[in-house]
Amino acid sequence: LLYTHNKYTTMESKIIFALDVYDYNTAMELARTVGEKVFAIKINWPVILENGIKIVRDLSKYANIICDFKLADIDNTVSMITTKVKEYGGYGIISHSFTGLNSLKAVVKSAGNMKVFSVVSMSQESYLDNITEELIKISREAGVYGLVAPGNRPYYLKKVKELSEGLKIISPGVGAQGGDIVNAMLLGSDYVIIGRSIYNSLDPLGTLEGFSSSINNKLNK
Ligand code: 3DU
Image (cartoon, rainbow, N blue to C red; front, side, top):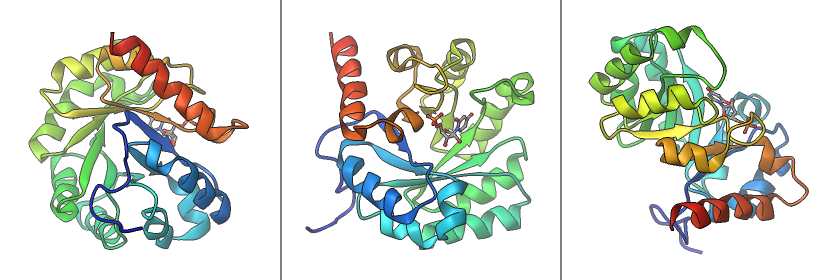
């Protein structure tokens, strides 16, 4: 198999798989199973804390990897982290935006051609709900590629969509956290992030395909 850029997807997928497991073999096996049926695989601290950053390179064999590190620090530190993710072949990185324009700009700069997504609203109530508009403004000014907004809280997803001016929206909160995939897409998500509903199911690939066909059935009519 030859891997060139954007090599993974044999079909257009609207799903980002949240691979929140610890074990290396489990992670690799899940990635191998669903890799070509998803837009990307999102990893978070659980898999990194157990395996280190090198797993980004290993997983990249199967899918675009988005590192959900929710960066929230000064410019130098977020820059150092972003640089490391890039070195290991990350496709994208997720940063907070409440730390302000300077930090977020540092992420975008160090990311180079990696996609930067910034969190502007969480899937649970948080202080960010008071400042979502400002966070979108900061994000746009910093030049991010996309925004993270909840797929299980219609009011906030709609609000983010209205102010997003073409930035991509990726949405957690579908499945285990109660959000509905079709509602989220209708309200403006470009991609939905799904973790537990897929990796805890007895048939991850079948479950994933079920989510995909529910989008295709409802949205392509
Ligand atoms: O609830 P799930 O298992 O489908 O996983 C959702 C993923 O998205 C998980 O990695 C979580 O850390 C991340 N996420 C949220 O759930 C909510 C947010 O506001 C931001 C990220």
